[in-house]
Length: 365
Image 1 (spheres, one colour):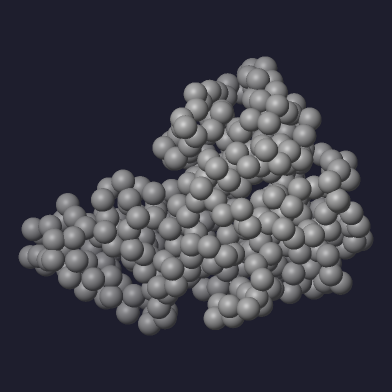
Image 2 (cartoon, rainbow, N blue to C red):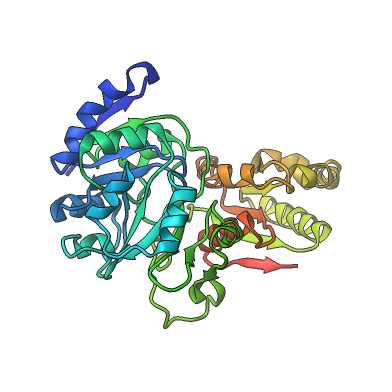
């Protein structure tokens, strides 16, 4: 059944006044989509099972996939968490507000519908003025996965929230683009050392620098292990995938570019449309290969290029990744080829998302 969705476009001069209505809606068990620094979230009162049910219904999301709970102040953590280890407190002081979620032991009253049936809950304090003010005004901790239909790329631009969620949720808050572009790092802090369950902007190296060490969940390292229980959102189901078939290529730069060239000609010659997500450094070489190709000249309107900044600065790639996958769907691409990156620091998070968006079609050449 379609809902009447209230759209609030934020004016920074009167932000608090505008958010009062959305905050009251959250407190009353309604669903509100809102911006964070990572991606847009779809929020509801984390302590209300019926409100959480409305999130799953709006997204078409499996109910055993954990949700992240968002707070506006450190003292709100006490409503949700049991024991918090000393090293976890150090990390919270270092990185909150910011793009990192801490998995802690949950208190009994936190619904299992929020935690995917687990005894732990993921908690985050977003670094976004709209999100922080909205949560504060609501007076409740806010469970919020990404504000997209389940399985689709997470939205960093409100237009994709409107596309997926208008008529499915009670309110959408338009607060401009998200500037990080990848969902938060998820860090399990229930053991003796922190363990990354989902990589993000806050990297293993940054965490280890603060507390002396950091491990990575075996489920991230060995993708063939079917016996490992996922403890983080986005770890179990098809995720971040556009309608197009995505393949990722990394390794020798010239080999990647030649592969792109060959696939472009193959796809357009057979009547298809193709999208290429690559770096500024790739562009001149690929354009030189294509400029005298007769097949390309006849079908150039079927080739869509998305430049992801420099390969030496992955922030642009991270910020644009989901948005450009969405754009290529809008342009009608049947096939998308992506230039992959080394799995170091932020590259680990980018490749994690690309592995899921491509359903494992990741090739080293």
